[in-house]
Structures are given as C-alpha cells and as structure tokens.
Image 1 (cartoon, rainbow over the protein chains, first blue to last red):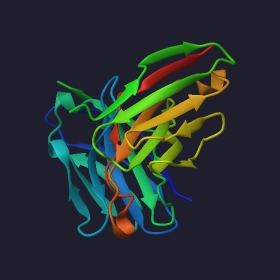
Image 2: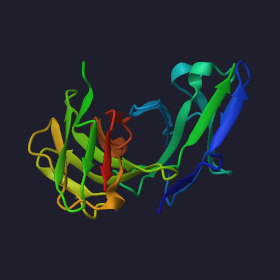
Image 3: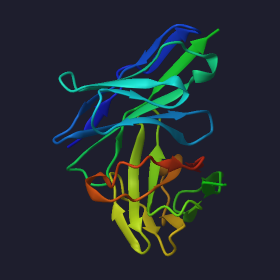
Length: 114
Length: 118
C-alpha cells in the first residue's frame, strides 16, 4: 500500500523569505513523487516530479524539491516566496507496484504575506 | 488550446437523482481519470481509463459508473445520488509512455465540477 502525509494544514511565510512545504510518504516499492499546486476554483497544476537520479528536483515557478530516501520525505522548497505563490499544494506518490494509482496527500495551504 | 474541459461547473441534485459529468480533452491523451476532492482528504481516485473502451476502478468507485466510448471523452455517472457524494469532482488526463515509466507523465486537470446533493 502507498500513502502520503502532509503534516501541516497551513504554512505562513513573509514575502521574500524561503518556504518549505513538507511531505512524507510510504511505499512498498520504489517511489515516484509529485508536487501539484491548486489556485482557487481551478484544477491542479503539475509543478515537479522525482522519478530517479538527482535528489534535488527543479520545477516550475522557481520551486524545487528534495528527495530523501532515508527519511522518506519529499519537501517542496523555494528560496524566496512571492505573494502569488499563495495556493493549495499537494504532494502525490506512486510506487512501482501500484500501476496507475496516484495517491495524494491532504494538501497544505501556503499563505505568503507582503 | 482548451486542455481538459468539464461540464457542468456546478450542479445541485436531490437524493436519488441521477446525473452525468462530462470530461473532454483535446491533447490526444491515452489516460483519463476521475477524482473527487474533499476538505482535508486530498484527491481520491474514483475510476480511470487507459484507453478508449477500457475503464478500471480506483480507490473509491462505489456509487459511480464511467464510460470511455471515445478517446477524447470520459463520462462519470451517478445513478442514485447520495449526500455523501457532495464533493468537487476533477477530471484529468495524461500521456501514455513506453516502458516501466508509463504512469509517470504529469496529469492535466480540468477546473472541476462542484456537486451538492441535498
């Protein structure tokens, strides 16, 4: 079975400060990890993914994520937050035993204040 | 380029009524999915399809049926709506790739259908 946890319902940061949105996962095989962002009244948009290779993955809008196998984590980061980054962020995982099933976390609301 | 289009955007049903949600994609994607989004629970997969004429159950399929008669369309049906089906429904599509990474193409989502069952 696969699962993903986002331990923070909301993260508050000031504009210009670095941000981190946390994600931990559990899989039975090799993990494939994703981050998506959702703006109000819209569907989710793909940000980045880790499949294999470098543990630091770079994605859209200046976001990056670090895969840590020993801690089973895939935290989303950005060096300098923008007010426009305020949105709902979802981590998702699939392992190579799960076929086409992608499991999403409960989401973390990011609030960036001017 | 429309991407993934869902209709309707909003709907209110009474318990026991039926309805069909329509999803259309213009990206020639092989895979299509229906998810429901509930507060604090993320997105849960209802049904999915890996090609025209094929469907499969996801994590929460009970009370829903789907059909994929054409590659670009994926329909989600509720035969007898219940208040527990009040949710926001999202359709998504993705490319098919070759090899073991077939399922790692990013999902493209529609803007959702907000359904209330009273």
